[in-house]
Image 1 (tube, rainbow, N blue to C red):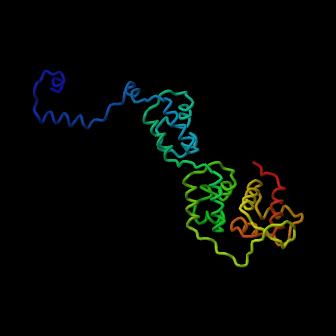
Image 2 (image 1 turned 120 degrees about the vertical axis):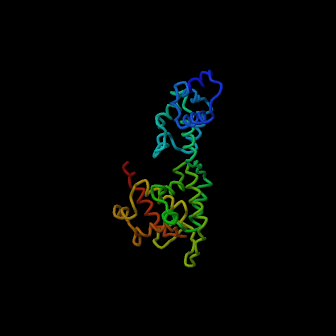
Image 3 (image 1 turned 135 degrees about the horizontal axis):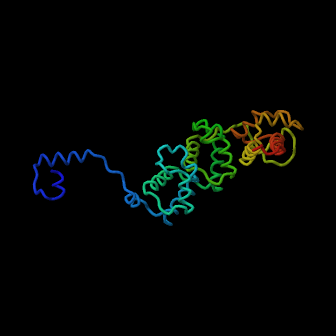
Length: 275
């Protein structure tokens, strides 16, 4: 009977029969797509699409390899090797849903900000204003060292990193903005540095001093405690690992000239850390 309906040899049918057949068809799954249908779902990797992918890679600082880290929901056949093939022209067409997945995944990654001199100066100024160093700030923010470390912030301030994730930058600046100005210390007097090496003579502790301390610690991989163990020559009295930590994490207004200059010279005398 149904065959005659399709053939057109039957001009009418009982309504309940027709409804039964239609309902039965509705319960069946879609047939697998044919090769022709799959080809129709493919889109050309033209210049505009390649430029979009390249822009996403540059703006996020994330390449195809890192893009698929933890990508458990990636469609079969969509991986870093496939995306590299898209970018270097080895593939000229791609499934539309695969392309859309990659673009969407790149869009979920925060863009990167260029660390201009003005941004670095702002970061250092906030640390000076609050007297809160990198380690102390990150304790308040609650990020893990894997997400952001004091060394990372030091490199931001020193200009050793050209760009940063915009969300991390905004998080750090927001955390500093929430902090009050450091209480003035009445016993601290700012002395201009006029040369000399007496242990008691003091000079202003600058943002560059702190940046230099952190940069040398990072370059050598030697902590404050280890530095004092290794370098004994002319080590001044009154210098301790906790004092050096205080300079970095809670910058003072002034420091003893001999102590700060010996510390920097001692770190600079050490070789780079082994890679």
